[in-house]
Image (cartoon, rainbow, N blue to C red):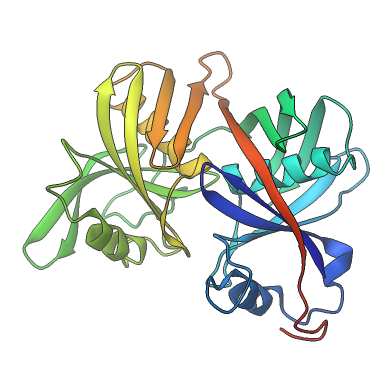
Length: 290
């Protein structure tokens, strides 16, 4: 089973062509095995690229997390898939449409460094949704927007959150700094909080200026990650909603810097960033596993 390893700012994915996995019984179990960093190839997830319905998109991409759950979308994961397609010359046009569980996303190639396997894309990844039911977040009464909402994470411990659906459920907390906060503990608690029936990604956001934010990410089904495309987009939108930034924001993650624009004219979020193809490999543990 051949694959390509790629990463977006340290958020790494194993990209498989769907035909390579035809004999796999369960993609969820396969993802758990192959993403294991000690006994597998290692990754924050797998991207399975297959054919799409004619006219709808150029390819279909399914994203699976290391715990076996399937994500609706991954900004970095789909960008890794796009980079693998361009690097392998499977796709040679400047615009690529990828069908995901969160809809069709358009990737425009801005720069290509073939020698290093590094590609920069601007991607239209969708419009955020803010209703509590759309996140989804269970609240005592339906909310049109979940802004500065109190969430009890433990007995006697309540945090203030902004929640939204940005391809996936996202919960954002604004902080003054990261060192004085046990954000990994909070991320773990909030990810599986009973108020989030589908679980949630958690972003801890420090506003540096109206044009720049810094983010730490606890990703649903993964844990701590160096970067997240949809998480960075959610953090940028949440900062704008709270009047802390404008609609164009530079997002600094531990793995690197992305650019997010929340367009005013149509509400679309445009995520710009790189993906780097690292190596090609072959999974040798048997075609009938999973």
